[in-house]
Image (cartoon, rainbow, N blue to C red; front, side, top):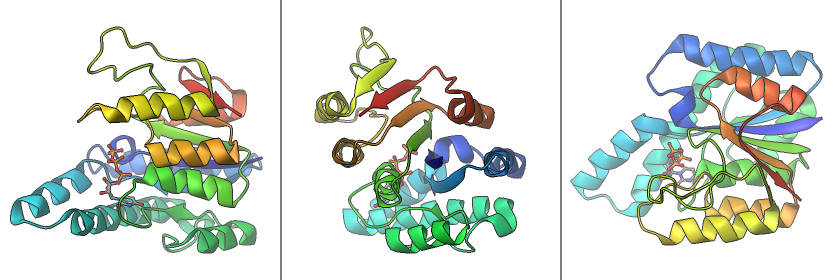
Length: 226
Ligand code: UTP
């Protein structure tokens, strides 16, 4: 079983806590011990938002801000690489092919961002498609896919299960309202749709939830089914 796990920066490094990073690495190592093949993608979290905010105030344009964001995601990826030790490829791959090569060699690729104008949600979907993953997991601070932005709409309900086509419709609708939170971005949803990748979106604030979701299928989030 080959799984790609996207670990949001807000769940891996809400604060810079080495014990927390180690706890995620321990879960990934236990999955490797059980015979799973893993590809990992790490987000930028609060530090990325702080850097982007500071650079925006200075007057940097959106492309430059995205490059700063990518830099922070790769820095976070290096933390997880440090915690995984020799089981991980030594640096964050900067292309899907480099990541796939690492995976085929038996190393865990730990990616950050790739190119401007997207987020690591899309990187995770792209990596899953590249390596023909059996499962893609978004371990995020949004506990699943909702019918609307739960911060904006009190009637928003969480889907237990949704098809890849429905995912694109739902995310497209949420993204149209300015400033809203979507659990994955629209590009990620489109890649999941075309690759028909089985995907879980779940609250990843406790690393053990990721392990239980992958091993037992036990989770409270949303399953996106081909
Ligand atoms: P994240 O993937 O963490 O963005 O990348 P996010 O989803 O906005 O953050 P969370 O999940 O809410 O914490 C951080 C930033 O890095 C840039 C973007 O600016 C993004 O907002 N980035 C990341 C890219 O430009 N390209 C990438 O491939 C990845």
